[in-house]
Length: 253
Image (cartoon, rainbow, N blue to C red; front, side, top):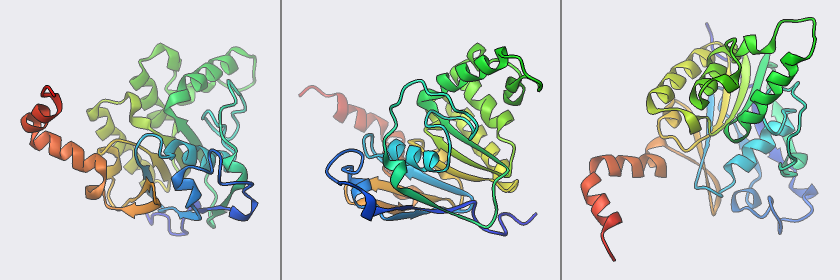
């Protein structure tokens, strides 16, 4: 099979800077956003990485909402709102789409996945003509599984291929072995013509071959190599020099 022979589902996202009212307040005051112009995406996998507070979740939320996804996660058709906490950044983002249109799509957001699970249960309690929605997530209520099990059930059962999947810190409840399993599942979906955009802290997840990694910094957003990310460097240094680093971290002042 030729993978993505017609290019991206989402080629880039452009910030319409001339329409931004001010770069002096959040979220436009974030360093990465203040310097932002446009962001191009790999046809397979693109990562957003950076320190806490750098704006990864803010940016990936804006990308998802600009494409029509619910701010708290789920599919394009999910229209619930637990709390209005998302920023206005999406109002100033313009997606540049590819020639193909995805047949599937999902915005996975670890911090609000409980709300998605609750919404699914509520929909399945209402009378309807089709079968239960939870059947597309493995058949068991996501609330009846551990956090990690429910996360992985979504990746395994709900993501069906030919899709655009946007994910915010999916590693939050996954063990290292489950993160490796997720990489394998991502590869299956990429081979089935899917595209991923992922914000993550996990050096395991961001190791997907040939992916683009963008680092959000005080100077803006820059492409980087996996081996040059802080996540890889610090983890590698710790694993290779555990005793020395622990002594330095834990010695009395």
